[in-house]
Length: 372
Ligand SMILES: *Cc1c(COP(=O)(O)O)cnc(C)c1O
Image (cartoon, rainbow, N blue to C red; front, side, top):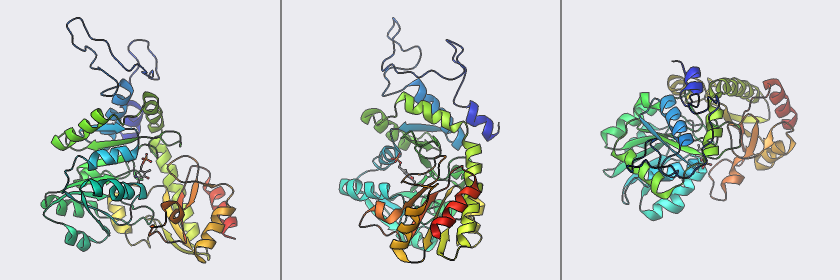
């Protein structure tokens, strides 16, 4: 079946007990055993398994074309479970431009725990190859990168990583299915913050790991999910499932709007640079065209006049909301360096935009009045 159909039907069936078309929310923490001690419905205790979470995991497995999925209470908890499925002493290669929360998770928690990590420009294949070591066990990809939208050639990096004996995980939070089917390019794991496009309405925190193969490495991720219990609540799973039903249509709108906003910013005299892989001028455009079916709703731009000018634009918008996060129906704008903190390498004149589903003409007009 096609993606639009799967998004609506792969995680849901009419409730056999009541005929309810929308699934019930199963709040029970515990499930009854049969007289012989077995669990006839397959559920024991909600930390290890819950019907709403199982439905979400099933749906995301189908949508990514993987073998299994594990849902977590946040994208960061999902990332932590992947990284701690490695062993102290293992080497990880991560992008030099990546979601700052996971960069901080690596620097403040996982490097002290024992991982060795190199942050490398993964738009540069030679730099990646030079960073590989005998102990490299995991390559972390985020393409387009955050917030500079650099593009990594997933198939090329994955081929080299596999030769070196390393797994590849793609943080696909900015590129939910069907935008970038990374298992087709050989990647081993996909991470999503369901917080963003999947749930899509800025009202749920969640994460998921999808595995191409249900192997021993994924068993370790499952064990962390089960034993540490950073699992999403049944209601959060229900909200994520509801959001995903409209995902394909939302992604089309986000991508179309972002392309129009990017083109208008690129033509504005007060804008120094626009970072959007859909623009033919983007250095990663050709690779992006090969591995992405749409270019997504995220972009960033740099304005003339430095940090003060960027802050002034963010101060003047009326329709865009000044807030962090992304992937909701409403458009957001953010001065990224100041949220990333003092050690941020993000240019001080950069604004990151999550382009929402308002009419693009209204968004373009708002940015034009804010730029002056
Ligand atoms: C938001 C985000 C995360 C982390 O998700 P949380 O649910 O906030 O923990 C990870 N990666 C990317 C690219 C994100 O945008």
